[in-house]
Image 1 (cartoon, rainbow, N blue to C red):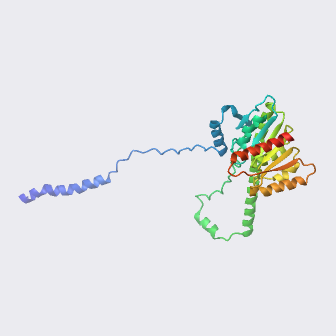
Image 2: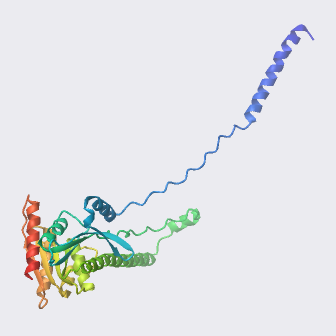
Image 3: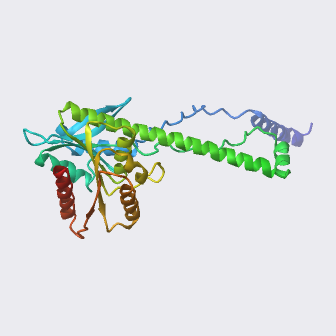
Length: 323
């Protein structure tokens, strides 16, 4: 072998070895990364309902001496109790707030519950459950992901049978109506259970006369309670700016004629929406012989809420003590 070839031989061998070593390195699997454990799904805490939030706020704001935890079925609920500031109480006024109102609502509910004890009446203001809190109807289930696509496409191209479609729609509507009726019944039972508990509490505290006072939709529930569950201990009903609940039946105009207790219907003539409802209630009372129903009109006092609340209190007190 010539000197030139011997000199070039190591370089030639190196050029042959390097590509092979690169191929070997490329064939080796990349070192595996440390396996990261899958993150566990975060469990979200159930949000409190509107009524629960109101109760929590009242527990912070209202003196402990005024707070009472009453029992209605398997649930406890907050009520605000103020005994009469006298050694000879006239009785107790149980206040039923309207929809989305707390037991210390600034319009009517709170002012009345605070004022009555100073004139010889104990007050017990209730918190009500959220209306239709569980009333969200489930959507139809989605089609299974494993469904055969060809079969699905075939169904889509087939003309629908109008008779079958109409029957399915009618059936779905009937099922929804039934579910809504059951939900409305359950909601009424929850409210009635709380009023039952309030009446029992007033009796335990030796109230010789009990008045049920409802504000807004609370007036509807107070009247319906006395219609469906006549309570001998409750002698009078006061309705303040009564409003129908829309979703519930029967209406106030249908309920009031069946009541056996003296009833005062305080209305605000400047509120256009309940005005027709108020007229319907008055007309219904006129068709009943010996109806113990009185409708009393309140005047608006623009820009002076405190005076409006004082007017309401004086008119309600005047009717209670004149009867």
